[in-house]
Image (tube, rainbow, N blue to C red; front, side, top):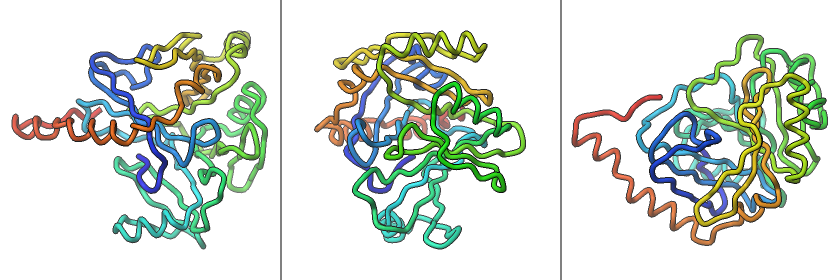
Length: 276
């Protein structure tokens, strides 16, 4: 999904089972995840790219409306590589990553802080969603535009923001199964779960421990908002150990891609990868 000038990844391979917190959607079998961003996960937004080895493509919905980043270098890279760009307004371009995911790139010098400005999600009732994310989850309302029917939320000015856009209709999640994740002190997770129970909100995965081979065990609670957007809260203490930049991340990813000959196997047997 993210392909321009991202930071060294960390890459983890899972050989033969799905995730009990549905990290790779409802799919079983071999899968991997790769974390990419413009800097360490302690202070940068990162994208988790999940690859289910037997799935060739996914049906996209109208839930994920784009990721916005500021980097003139990304714009020049896309032009140099011949990647399609559409100018939507002055100094703002729209492009699509492999798979169709939309990215908005602000054609300005990349800041020294995280260049990822916001992630945009579609909602069916802006007032209801704002109440959920701001009042229940505690995000700060940074900006509200009644004419364009959107709000901008965040936990801090220096962090990537969340934009909610009213699409005036039902939110369709397709089959790609994305989610937004936040880290918080581990001690807050039981209270968060209790609050959601009290407010009769949906808890997709109650407080659970997740093991990662050779790495820290983290605890998470996974919620869904009124439109079914998945939200993962993870205990920060263990997550900081898990999310340390892996100096071998690039090598592990290159090795995994080189060893994945699934396209050749499907072509040899005259079959197509499954479409989710």
